[in-house]
Length: 182
Image 1 (cartoon, rainbow, N blue to C red):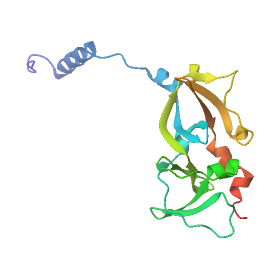
Image 2: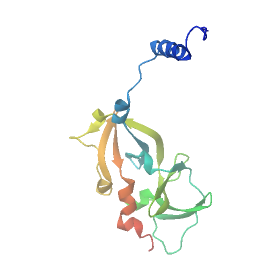
Image 3: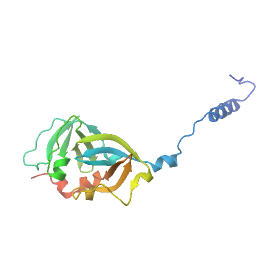
Image 4: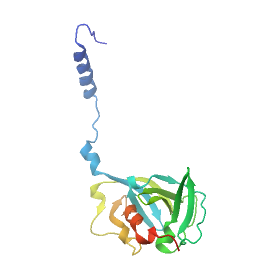
C-alpha cells in the first residue's frame, strides 16, 4: 500500500481509481440499455405473447379457487392470495370459448390494476423476454386472430419465434372483461 503520509489522501484515491479504470471491462451504456424492450412471455393456445414487464405483479401456480355463483363461465372464481381476493379469469375461455387445460405448466399472471387485482390463467409462462429494436416486425406480422387483434400492439421476432405484445391495460378496460356477472 502506498504511504499516505507522503501523498495526500486524495492522490491515493485518484491512483486507485486510475488503476481500476485501466482494468475496466466495456459495458453497455445507459442509452444502449434503453433500446432493449423487455416483457413477460407467455403462451395462450398456439399464440406466443409478451406483455409489459410492469403489468404483471407476480406469476403463480393455479391457486385454490372458489366459484362465484351467477358469474360468467370464463371467471374461474376468486382466490385468496396472501389475504387479498383475486378474481381469476380463464383467458382461453374468455377469448376462444374453450377452457384452458390445466397442466403442470399452467400459470396465473397476477395483475394489479386500477379496477382491482385479477389473475389470468394461461397455458405457460416463459419468463423475461428481451427484444432489440431490430427484432420488431413491421411488414409481415405472423400473429393474428380476430379475438386477440384489439389487444396486440406490435410484434417481435427473435430466434425464429414470433411474439405479439399483448396489452393487459386494454384487457382490464374492456367492457366485457369488466362485467363478469352473468
